[in-house]
Length: 457
Image (cartoon, rainbow, N blue to C red; front, side):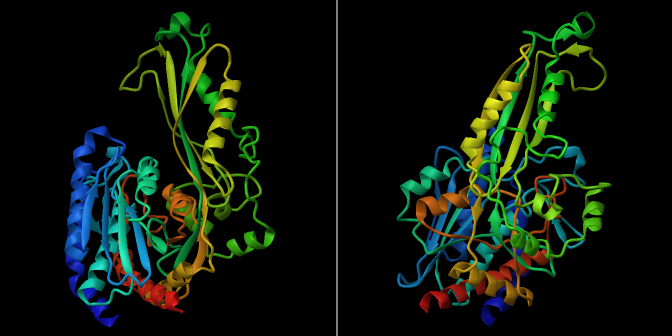
């Protein structure tokens, strides 16, 4: 393993330069105009896997954006690790809030600033470089397969069919993912739970055309006003979601589990200062740590209608729209929640408007057991890499494919991320620390070493 670590140290500058090249590709999966960039990013990753030592490296075309697959089978009798990541990124908007262009990465204060720096190009690329280091130094202890997709940020709709059609190709013993965070650079952690998600778009229609707000204002429903009231009614004064039967399947944690969770280091004042807020807000009866991980949520992610350009236009709009997401916890089903939302939203609409609800995508919540070989190998790796034992932690985000891995391939997923909650993923000025990028590359080989040892026992 020392040879592997020396190789990483010797080539770290090149590793960084290569990542910056990948970050320059605007692979925004939600933007149809970026399809050529999606293909470009997939081709680059395929080539990188081949150069790193993969015996098979190919771009698999699917109905949506392509999937990159690679593998190296050193011995069929050894365990196989399936590495999952994604090369697509969130839209960079609003552009005027970036301090530097989102697809022109810059390094400042020991951090890489670019869209996708942390989520997930930087974290995914760590695995390719760790793989390269293990191959080039003869340190690879397991067989490896890579599946890098291009639709994670839009729901991974093409992954289900791909898994079903390629079960034999994707056969493995464990899935390894770095698309989550640690508590802090001096407090390593392993994510053992993810929230699920239901994402929808709603449309409220009033009159059949935009109207003069002086002539018709006060006599005809304004869809924007109605939509705002409807969204506001979806939570009560305790920030409890008001959709009937929404909480029926929520897995409630006991006092012992909640107490253990809240022992994790957390500075509320530093949290508020980082976000520039005077106070936190959330469901009554739960701490900030709990609200952001083990409780379901409902949020408006975007809202628009009427005149939004410079200056004034006295218009009463015909339509108003909003995008709404609900983060779900174990036992909640995204399809069931989408149906409950639609029925409730239609029921609360006044007769002066009509409503339309369009589900976009969903993903199942997930829990990783902490007593299996994969988790134990990750614990060993993080302790070796950071010099201290990692803590188990729940994440508030969603990775839709993780539950599908277990359902379709029968594999547990280990979420060994290296980002920080302060990396501003999905926001302007997303960044990823150089410390985290290099620490990930250094730590990942220890996972393979320990997983092979535990599998041989």
